[in-house]
Image (cartoon, rainbow, N blue to C red; front, side):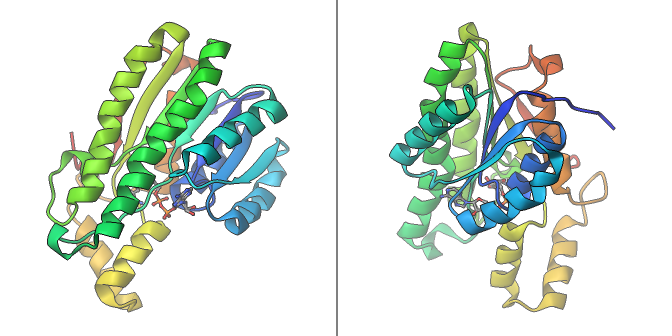
Length: 260
Ligand SMILES: NC(=O)c1ccc[n+]([C@@H]2O[C@H](COP(=O)([O-])OP(=O)(O)OC[C@H]3O[C@@H](n4cnc5c(N)ncnc54)[C@H](O)[C@@H]3O)[C@@H](O)[C@H]2O)c1
C-alpha cells in the first residue's frame, strides 16, 4: 500500500460529502492533509466532517453549489483566508441522468452541463489566481470513462465529461509555467449514491433487481470487478504527490480496463 503524506497541504474537494468525493476526502485526511468538504448537501458534509475528525487535521465544511460561480469565488476567498493557501482542488461534484436525448427534459440537460462542466470550469477559474500567486497547485478533475465510449443513452452526460478532458489539457499547458499541474481521473463503475439512484430508476427500487442489474452491467470488466471509491481516491492522491510532479494534462482511467 502506498503511504501518502500530505502534511500541511490544504485540499478542497467538491461533492465531498458522499460517494467518490467522500472517499477522496477521507484518504487526504488520513494522509494528514487539511480538507475542505464543499458540497451542496451541507448536512451530509457535516456528518462526514465528524467521521474525519479522528485523523486530527483541520476539516472544514462549506455549502457550495458548483454551478454558481460567485459561490465558488467566495469559497476560495474563505479558504485562503482561513488556511493561508490552497494547494489542491479536486473538482468532483457531478450528476448523471441516463436516457435517450429525445426522452430527456431540457432542464435535466442543463443541470448536467451546469454542474458537471460549468462547475469544473468555475472551480478552475476561481482557484487558478490563488495557485498562480503561490506558484504552486494541483487540480484534479473527475471525468468519467463515459467520456470515451460513445454509449447510447449518455449523450449529455458523456459530453460534459468529454469537455472536462479538453479543459484539463488546455489549462495544464496554460498554467504549467506557474508550477500548476492539471490532470483528470476517469472512473469506471462504482456503486455510489449516483449509481444507486440510476439503478432505482431502472428497476423501481427493487433491491434484487438492482443487484442483478449491477452484476449484469459489470460482468465484462476485464479486471473482473467494479471499482471501489478507494480505487479512485488512490489515483487522485497519486496525481497530487511530488512524485507525480512531471505529470500534467493527462487522463488517468481507473476502470479495470473498460476503456483505453
Ligand atoms: N460512480 C460512478 O460510477 C462514476 C463513474 C464515472 C464518473 N463518476 C463521476 O464521479 C463524480 C462523483 O460521483 P459519485 O458517484 O460519487 O456521485 P454521488 O451522487 O454519489 O455524489 C456526488 C456528490 O456531489 C454532491 N453534489 C451534487 N451536485 C452538487 C452541486 N451542484 N454542487 C456541489 N455538490 C454537489 C452531492 O451532494 C454528493 O455529495 C461525479 O462527477 C461523477 O460524474 C462517477
